[in-house]
Amino acid sequence: MALNRLTPSIGRTDCDVVRRARLIKVTVFSDTPRFDAEGPSSADEGAFALPMADYEGLTWLAKYRKHVNDDVRREALAAFLPAFEERYAQRLNMRQANLTARIGVGDGMLKEIQTRGCALAALSDASRRRIRELTVPMAARMHESLDLIEAPRFENGHIRLDPAEHADIFEAVSDAFEETGLLAALSAYSSKRLRLGSLGLQVNTAKETRARYGELDRSGLPERATTYLHVDSNDWPCVKALLYLSDVGPDQGPFRYVVSSHQLMGPFEAAVRKTNDKLRHSPVVLCALPSRFAQHANFGDYVDPAAPDVRRLLEREDAVCDGRSDVVLFDNNGVHRGGFVRDGYRYMLQCMFVRTPKP
Ligand SMILES: O=C(O)CCC(=O)C(=O)O
Ligand SMILES: [Fe+2]
Image (tube, rainbow, N blue to C red; front, side, top):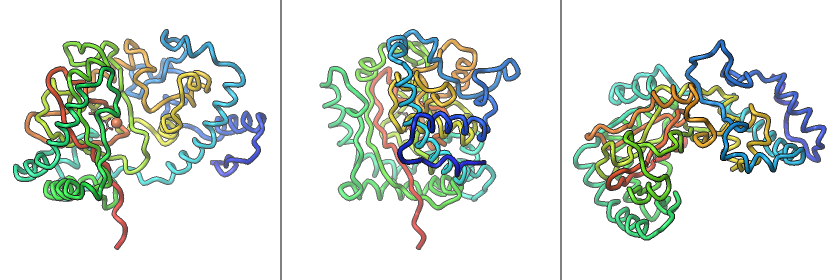
């Protein structure tokens, strides 16, 4: 693959940009067959795949589409291509998820994440008590201030915990993840020994959900059924854990996951989608990019909820809670979302992992 011919050049001209776009098109064949086509072909009717955005058809995008002209197209492509090339080259060298490893303790979780992309784990009573004692008072304070905000945004209910200031919480969570075999399962899946890297404390409430998404329907979804459907934009490791700090049932905004969607994207598609997400591209820029380069990791708002492929995806979506388990672990290349609270609230820790340095 002639990727070395595509390294970013200084003083790029418009002509270079167009040539580079052509090179990518002809030299790099996508590994997700459906992603190669401009749209679904009759041959892959019924395929289980991430849906392609409908930038031409969606009415809410009309006000953005009208700003697209050749200058915007050129600028959009010039911003996209170097970032895409770098990410794609990295992804081709990236360690893939291990779908066959076995470890003994933690195998149940490991098998679930390997086959379904997502698993649940219960903590011991002592670990649950210790973690909740350390975190729930802080979450309750966040809850109080969230209640006072008329039009809350995601950041109003989410704080990153400083590892030095909250060393006690990091230690309690790490101990609990060792104890359950969860860390071993995620490490085996990633083929590298992982440790807890960062923690986000998140509060979602029924009031905040209504303000952000309107009333939920009987299945617990916003009026636009695809809202917030996404894959994550980080590259590696592709695993995350969400630790519920309050009791979470179907009405308390459980995490939701499209079962077995974790293997749908090949490196090409993943690099395209994650690049657009990382670049925080506006709807105008997305409308200006060639369709195949315009696909986004956070695609929920850009697809038609009534399209057959989108409905197939929604049919496979599960609410991940069982009234007993505390932790959801998942491959974040799979399609997911969460936090649509119909009644009460959900407190949780979002847990990210990093590779343990070699001794
Ligand atoms: O709020 C949720 O349940 C979804 C969280 C999420 O998308 C993530 O942690 O990547
Ligand atoms: Fe996510």
